[in-house]
Length: 328
Image 1 (cartoon, helix red, strand yellow):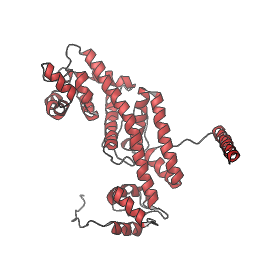
Image 2 (cartoon, helix red, strand yellow):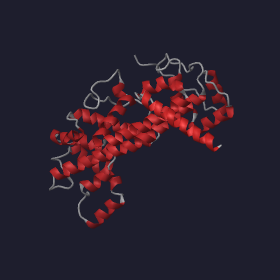
Image 3 (cartoon, rainbow, N blue to C red):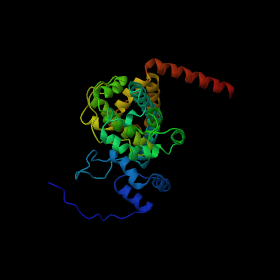
Image 4 (cartoon, helix red, strand yellow):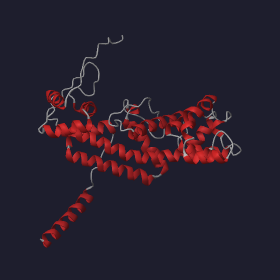
């Protein structure tokens, strides 16, 4: 049964009113001037997304939801989670670009060499669907044609489109996802996916969708923490199984990113995790209570330092302190 709609009667509020509302819900605010800075910088509505995990009724979003938070929740805790989300977006954006370039390069190289006689195979009905060909000029190539290298190409050569290796350089990850899905032959799709050691076509397609959605969230400053994917990630080489609905969350998407990046470069994947662990560790130093929330929402488990490493760090710390005292 459809839920009965009601008129929306809430009005805009001032920073002072927003602080009052937050306090009413149990948020500890000791410095009103600083809280006003947070609200001016982040926005009350946006801050609410990061307040959600602290709510007593979390993770409910239905009529069971109340906005009251767990005792002791400070506005600084919520803001720390917000800045952690920014750090995570910045880290992932860099490595998602590496994956995107690898996927683009694979498609261009494999299919351009397979269809050598047709440099514009991406608008050939023997290679891609008629629907893709019909939409491509208006939905994708219109903006691509404005790029200077493409303009130079058309000023020199005949033909409606530049060759694949030029055109696809300016195709978005979303364009590449649609192109992959529009390939007529499964053997062509598998030619691409096999480069990433995933032979299941629909599974690889679900990887591309997850990548695109996380990349868009990173590029446009949208919420990563607790994001929900539009469609589920299929089980495959990246994820043999999922717990609950992890295949529709950022937690599942992060496993896909890790897997694909490892197919591109194990070293880069290790670099990514070092950066993620560092950002997460700094968050825990500020707000230790965030650990269960972050682990639940992201699946990021910061490894404990080994006893050997702790011993080495303790020795180094003693040496540094001794030298400092010696020079005083």
